[in-house]
Length: 116
Image (tube, rainbow, N blue to C red; front, side):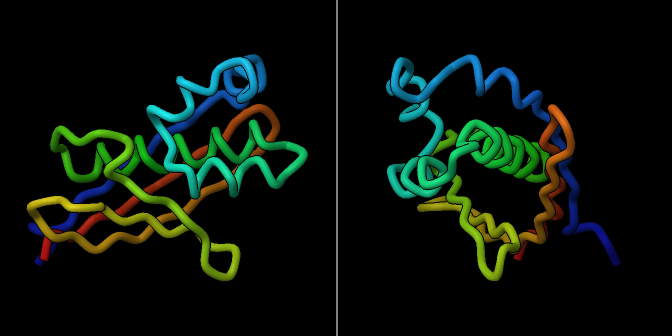
């Protein structure tokens, strides 16, 4: 039975984040990413690629639950280099499977959600 499962996918052009540097657009980033997510991305030389990937993960999650939710209510992280997504203080409970890939100028993410 798959009635409680949904899938979301999103693709992001990494160049959009490369052109919108964190230093000059801090307010933009703070509306989308938690401080923890920002600090993670800024550890990397190619932080724009990391931000694009996290953005794609959040968009894919939103599509998989088909509910209105703010970006800051979605937390992304990595365990053993694998993406993990979860909802913060959200009325419904979900489990997620997430996948993220980067290739050339694009980051793509897929999220499968299960309402529990």
